Image (cartoon, rainbow, N blue to C red; front, side, top):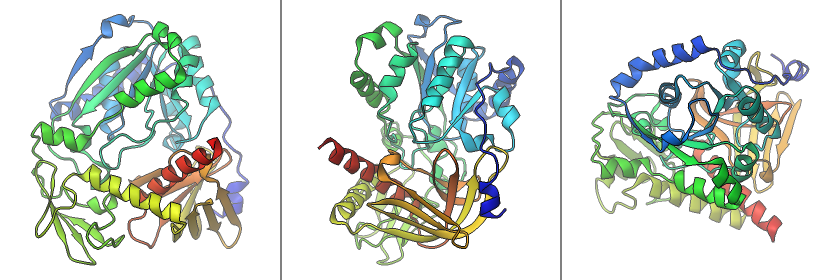
Length: 417
């Protein structure tokens, strides 16, 4: 549809959450059974006797792969719970998402309407609320940033906080690997984390500190320390999406993950991803044997470029657009530019010109193989979301997310200064 026609469509009207239909809760659990059985799923309950059977709570869960919801549906049944999820998940199935209790929101943006919806679910509907505070899947197997508003949110909600933490879900289905499943057992801990009384006595900053500690994990380290063998021959396929910069020659966008190897197309250096999650150079020095260390180094490089003023993303993109949950529309092509000034998206024969400042979001909604369409970067506001699919430039999605996160930190630091 033409850009101007999409822009003229009515923006979605806010609808309050509804109590999830019991039959759908049961169906979700039954549909989850087969896949969880394949993973030999087990779980531990830690301190859960403190939570009343009918007492609404906030459930925080780390976000690793598509199996997360199936784990939650199994562990929480028959407790009624609403689910905070991204608004594009409602497209084409609004009624169903509402019926199972989903609450739409935009990723990585402070949303007071969401807090009101959560309060309504907890206090009026007497439902628990499931939330993935990381808001997006991990790229490198470590935690993604948590919003600074979480501590304040816990105090506003005033209900017990429970955490579900998974083990093996990332190793089984890492985002970079194009939805190819590995044979890995999955387990989870469900822990009573904070009582309403404890939340009252702690400051928002103290609560943020507790959450940061609980959401501090390293899935590759977990694999290594527990001797989890991943023998699939495709385990390094598309690893270049995460490790896009060669530590030997520093070329970007030239890495290729294929089979069990990660190879630089510029200098030719090769690394093997071993069955136990280590990287090993086939010749010469292994600069980084641990994937999150390599990714952390890429973050440092991006921050240096931002500080020096040399960072710039300027790529052609295909553009899709969402203004409500009826559809996501292809509206044409354009250019996405990202600098220290923020994002600027232009295109659709000169009709589209959207700018977004660095302080607008503490991270970036970006994804690999999004809905099996392609790698994607999403920006936007309450009126419209723009889904940008780069058509040139190599692997830029991870670097752009890193740049957005670091730029947000730098902008906030300047503001405080």
